[in-house]
Length: 338
Image (tube, rainbow, N blue to C red; front, top):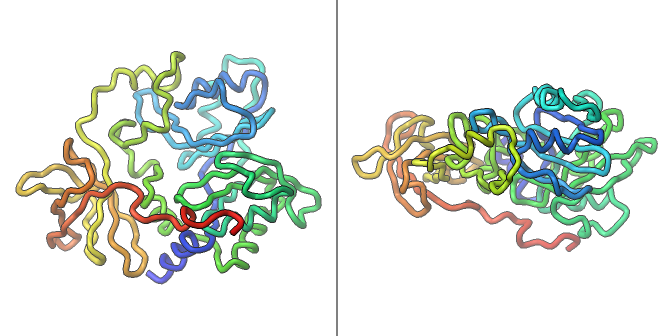
C-alpha cells in the first residue's frame, strides 16, 4: 500500500516517470502515409508535422488490437504501441506491396520516457530553448539533452493521466530515462510503477489495452474518440467496424467504499437482476475509494446508479456508477510556469 501511495502521489502532486509502451517503430519514406492510412483507425491524410496523437489499431474483425501514440515529423512517423510487441511486423505486412517505405523496429536503439504530473513542465522547461508553455498539447519539438555530448531528441506534450504530460524520445545511449529521473527526484518525484499508473489512468478513463478491452467492440469500450468514423478509405478492420451492430452493453467506471473492492468477474446486480460484471479493479492508494470498471447492459452503463456487487469473500458491496474524471487533476488548476 505504501508503495502505490508514494508512486500515485508522484503523479498527482509533483511528477512521475515511466517507460511508455511495448513497441517503438519508425516509419519513413515517401509512401509512409499509405501505410499509416491502412493501419491506423484515425485518418492520417492531413496530419500536420510536429504533432502527436492517440489512436487505435483494430484487428480484421473490428476489435481493438492496440492503442498507439503517433508522433509525426517531417520525414518520419513514430509509433509507440501500448501493449503489443509485434507492431513492426504488422506495419511491414501493410507495406509489403510498396516500394518507398521503411519500417524500423527502434526498440533497442531509441528510448521513450514519459513524465506526468503538475510539476512535469519544470522538467520540460529544462529541455527546450523557448517558453515551455508555448509547447501546446500534442505539440512536438526537437531538444538537446543536457550532458549527452550533443545528442538530440524529440519532446512531445502528451499524457495519459489528466496531468501535464510529456514524452521524450531519444537515443538509448543518451540515457533519457536517467536524465528525466534525476530531474524528477529533485522535484520530490520519481519513477512510478504499473499499479499506480493504471489507477491514475483509470481515474480519467484513459484506454488501457488489452486487459480492459478483450472481446469488446470499440463502442462497447467507449473508445469512439480514437477512431475517425467519417473516413471514405478502407483501413484495417473498417469493414467489420461498419457492419457492427449497435452495442447492447458498455464499460462504466465504478466506485466502492475504501476497503471493499469488488471481485473481478463478479456479477453486478440492480435489485435482483444481473445487469453486468466487474471487468477490472484498480489498486488503491492509502485511504482512497475503490475504483473498478463494470461491463453493464444498456441502459445501466450511465453514471449516478447505485448497484450491488460482491468482494472476494462474497460480502455484498455497494457499487456506484460515476462519470470521468473521478478526481480533478491538480494540473487543471495550476498554470504552467506558475
